Length: 568
Image 1 (tube, rainbow, N blue to C red):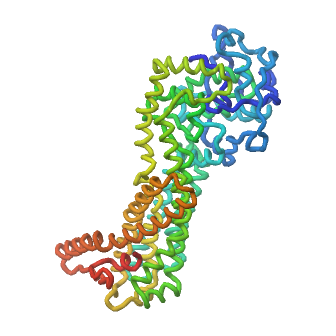
Image 2: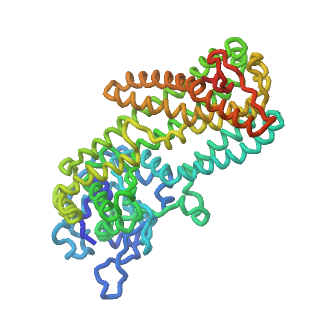
């Protein structure tokens, strides 16, 4: 492997210098401290000694204790960092020939973050030599970014898909029997039972798998415990010899990983060693095997989804209150429209706040990639800049070629993966607004028939017809109305991104409310009416005797499902 100077903070991605007040652990002390340092140095293969192997660790070790592994001394209130030359006696066991050229005592000293001697040995003992087939993920990050955001980004990357599958499976397991048993028999499922089975338990299951999926035994679900390379666990932070060898094999670690996971923070492209990791992966793995996970993305997705759950809970409670029946008797459609605007007001406070954060952070990310320049990158030891530039030239031919690659090919790859700043991929929105579709099933099987019985005569319908209309409305609301309104609000947010945050936030909230209301009405009159009319006619033509009793809306004066008129 290319011999690199071990001077990149916690690893190549850190850029955080080690504390000169804390002494480096000599190699002999490291061996006596309990660390797993059985893999010998690769200085004397002629003597029959096994070569040094770069190391890997299970994601369970990385995610344990809610990502405490990402904590630095700055997180603990110690912000003073200093660079001091490494005492020569601590380099005694290192092959002196390896210190020639680019490897300097100062470079070795600047590698690592503030870690006690015992902690460094214990952390290193968690890793093991890499197997012949390498590892699943090389984690590249900046140590100056929030450890909590990095933890959330990792659990979202590793566990989100499995958590979503478990939640939907639990929902389907309860929904199909409830629909077939209660709707067909025109009986009602007890409201609290329906809420817990169809909304609460799926949400709880998603949260548990998302946060604690790494605790699932590896034998039962390998995908939830992938192997990875993380600098603090796989490179010793105090043993000078082990540290040197770990950094020298950094390129082997990137090459031996099946993908590179970039935990993007705003200073990621300002860290020269982070850029170097990205360059190796781009050349060895290709851009399609680079996953760029912005640290703002999981909080955005989860906050909007949580807001949707809050709206669903409020709607569930109001539908079963005296206020709902009073408005239904007196105002019908106009009263319901006002009620649902109020229901959506509280969750939209959080939705619009995180949407504005998403747009601003997303725009900064795309601008950084589009205007990338090595001149803006920082490095702890300035002498390392020439070394990294030389390696970049060996990979891409010239530093200009690498800059062009980032600005063009990598920029397009990132844009395809997470979209433009003014856009939200539909898959994201389908997840964020999924609870509204769940509410449609709850409404179908548990809304008391007394509520339906309070409707005016022209809106009377049976349990089966009400279930069909409710499902149609809520599915359309979750997967059509909300995504369309959210997308247009995102455009407005992007256009007003230079406004003061509070002013823009209030403007976004007004726009979102207006769009949801307008599109719900359009969904009822322009889209729902002809689609449902054609569906009813088709069913009646091919299935004589099967008829749907749809209500007539006094506002739209057209054939629409009851759920659409009352809730829009």
